[in-house]
Image (cartoon, rainbow, N blue to C red; front, top):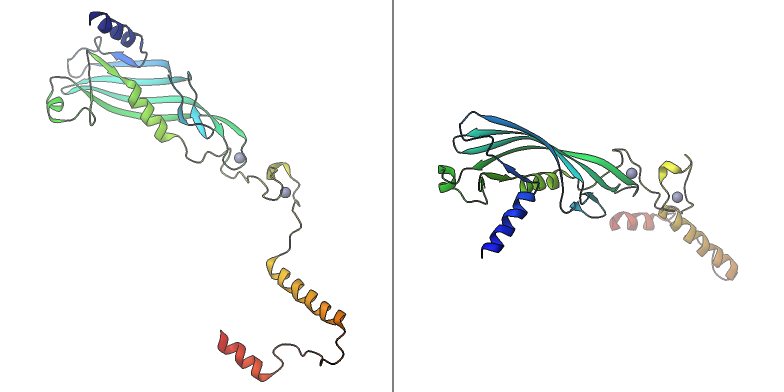
Length: 220
Ligand SMILES: [Zn+2]
Ligand SMILES: [Zn+2]
């Protein structure tokens, strides 16, 4: 339907990620610098970890070059990021920068005939779509485990307060498992004493008999 087609064209024309290559021409060797800020349509990345938020401006600094097979795009993109430190959970703001290199093949080129559109991007109606190129590169460049600083000490497991906000000597009273076993034995012997069993012989310390020592040795 004609109405639908024109609607599609108008949408495409408004899509800021579509670059018109008309001005570049198709003479191999000609080039065209492109610098602009383009807002991301939907947030990129992992929510609550790190994202380029919806509507954030991505600064692209590109060179479009006409080559025999199509349009070669090289350059970089920089975008603001928001997230939280995965150790101390502090909110973080930063930037992500990616290098870009991508060939957009002409529709009538050998590349077009010999490759799949999934493998090599295409020039469509003299336009190239930077959206997928930049999105993929930015998502890959975002850290999986964002940190406010490389040496962030995170949170005290005892109280959940940031180590950075705690005194140097901060700690929680815990009994070392090795000491815990000793405490248990101490309590047992105290209980025996409390029983006051007069007829039982005083218990000799373990290992005082040669038999015990050899038994211990064979057990190991
Ligand atoms: Zn941190
Ligand atoms: Zn603590």
